[in-house]
Length: 386
Ligand code: SAM
Image (cartoon, rainbow, N blue to C red; front, side, top):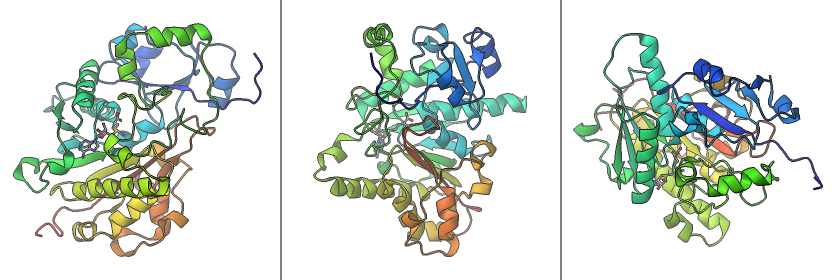
């Protein structure tokens, strides 16, 4: 058929799961007959389907042509590789988990892309250390019962059972952050339900480069396991439980967009402030797959202006403190959207905006629309007596 406009590239992003394999091994096996190109533009220009690009921001991440059909490969079925949008790999990487961080909480965990990425990063740390350390603990909270089942399966497939404890039907907000039980928690991932406006395939998105008809059919009839594990990359049915869909509860509040965004944003802020209350926590990463400032920069500003942030001395993880691969990432928070900062300990507007990482939906980086920011505090002593 005729192609009216040149579709923008949205590659098939493939994360190599360090719990089961290594990038080197995968390049020598699953991708042995693939040629390597230096950029997404070259990937797009290539007429071959067996071509890949090793991402330059996120370690262990590959970009393949959009139609790449890997769902039947052994590597996929046994959890060596995971389909995960590049943007969705930012949070765990930005958290920069170390074996010294203590325990981790993923407060909004299903279907488990970020939980398993976190586990994968920690297993690399363990391997690099060379010594047998105690396995890190990751608590994965998920309030939705059926999504928690999907999460459990994903953790199993990824080989992360020894690190991850799934807490099904656990509302994170009902966990008491001050309790002794969570005293070991040093870092949290927070990827709450959001409007999903950054998801590729939603509303006004540019056309995707679709796989050939044959592959499309195959994809449709492929087993449930595949659908389950598919992240929010090319959602056909955005209501499906497998994608990062907005929570129905929030959805039902809908009405007009601005009403909906303000209720989502209030919920997101609540979760973030709750995370700030964990007594030993020193790192929190907040993310959404939204392109709306209400769910992104505005939440950051309100969080920094909060009493709890001031008392506990939470501030943003500044650009120069970010992991090497993301420090150079160019798309940052909007200055205008960060207005209203009270400054002081939380940081100046420029610093805060520059600490926020954004991904454009349908842009030349080939990602979904996304937002991520890290919060840190330098000591857990200050303000902890409250
Ligand atoms: N982090 C996941 C991943 O990368 O695969 C995607 C998370 S999705 C955007 C948000 C999830 O948080 C949904 O599964 C939702 O049910 C869950 N959730 C929302 N509010 C929650 C709460 N208060 N406690 C626990 N889970 C919650």
